Length: 301
Ligand code: AHR
Image (cartoon, rainbow, N blue to C red; front, top):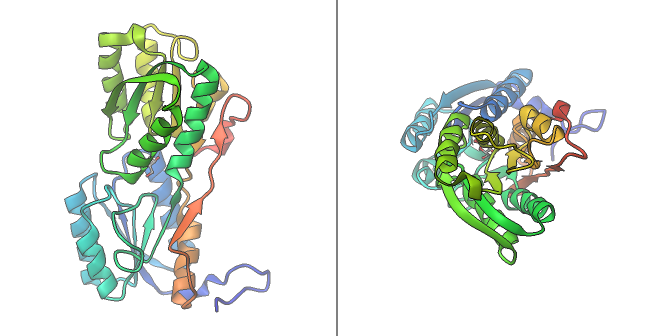
């Protein structure tokens, strides 16, 4: 069993001296940077040597980064997968070498026990369902919707789309455009500029798979002369401080949180694995929907 410290908290001393690989899919947004820093800081606090690699949004590089970590003989691998397909063979190789694999923030097409040890993430369907319910309430279930999607093939993009579309399916909300913008602010701004040029007067709601894209869409909406919150309702996911500020001021309708702070829960899980404690195949992080009544920028990252 895991040792408990005198104060009842999990004893993390099993982590001391371990070498752990962390394969980040990209480090190009405030959310990803907060996630990377959370994992780096928790590793440092627990005397863990962290082998870090940033795949720069390239799934082939991510597979090769993980291969390098196996070759270096790390004790565990933490992976934030870029897409759900493309890592299975290298993750199976790690598992065959006895290296525990902890997936964080996105999933892979595969099975716990074969392709990875455990997965820690938010419930993306739930997040998008909450946003869709808020949109239905604000529009009385009528209007034209634009969806700015995250990275194609990322579980956070696929499942957020599914949760949103399933929730509005019996309403008069009609999706008129669905376009990927890579979870990135600048890309979303440019995609939104083009949509507004072509059919700006038809757009009532913009649902973005994350807050960076919602903030990029907001910039495009304002530059095109529309008033966010009145002409067009903008929604995101993540709970970035800037998005919470926009929700508080009425420029955004809502955002659902999606915590980037994976360090503590991930290393607690590794401590349990190191102590041969049973861990669940999936650990779900609880989120909150923020609208004008509860948005507080201090709660963001
Ligand atoms: O997988 C989690 C998502 O990935 C976050 O919502 C997003 O901001 C990131 O790129």
